[in-house]
Image (cartoon, rainbow, N blue to C red):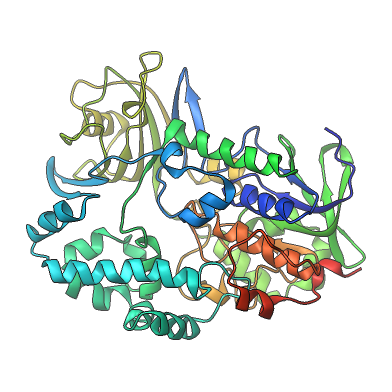
Length: 487
């Protein structure tokens, strides 16, 4: 494929956000090149093979991609993931403590057994559903100008009374009163417990129902790639690109061998914003980033999310510590491990006699103990892979190992995500946009950051986009000449 261009836009990274951004740009008439350093699409939301079987290497659950965005892109969420009932099960020391049913009446009965009244759960569900519905209609999710926390609370409260208070107050100050302390803790990761309720509502706006990606996210990744190509985007794999900076702006990327691919209107960084210092020339950083901004990026990149990501190949067929088949996501709490496991080969026809289990959490023991815990005492470990921080950094440009790239916490939320002043998907470097999990609204496999960044870039280029989901009032306020057309 020729890459000379110049293109209207170049997207760096063919993860789900990069491919969504490429589709939105191309659907609105732009010429687009996507450049990816790895040989396949999907980024951290992609699958890898062991023999004939596939497993999700990093991301392992699908649930927060909005149905409207999936439909816009031609993605059938029911086809790219399996959706067992129950969706997930918590197993404590070998005993099932909670089954999260997809059917409302069964879930209500389950929660009643934990002391959560029907009225309390329905109020919590009303907040979750209201956040998703009002977040779309009020421009909190689809936006080119993310609001402040106070502005978001006001808008959501106008849409559904009581929702604004739940967004502003810490999750741990109100969720336990509705759900009980143990269930409130089970619905959010510990670092989010005393963050604004916005974070807990965001991660549960799907009513905590999670699907397991088919063929280890490979189906979703290739579906998104086909959508981008069908709309006219080109995708170049196996090319580690650096940003090309000339005459005060980013105007393309430098490819291996010194080739330059030009971008007339802008470059979208669909990898972690923490990659910016290694991808941008020093003169660009010196000219446009303050000393405080550079220090903030360095400090964030030095943090470490201490999560073990382990993929296991086993024989014979695993026996998960739950009686449900096909197995839901299994959250285990024991002396061996604390985390979540998925069983991709138990949701698809067996291939080659190898079974795979993927675990994400904290190990308290060795891999043989983990295999026995997750697959039964007769499990025989054939192969194991640990995807640690070094792997995530070198292969996915994620130096922290955080699935959200940077914390979903103050001061990195809404209009301050990834940093104060960067919330509108523009970096301080003219011509360069950010479009990844480190962008608003944050992590998980949603595609929303890619969508929003693409719309932002189009507006800055003077294009009135038609293929998008940003509410019209926000689109009008966000219109105007911007960096995309600067010389």
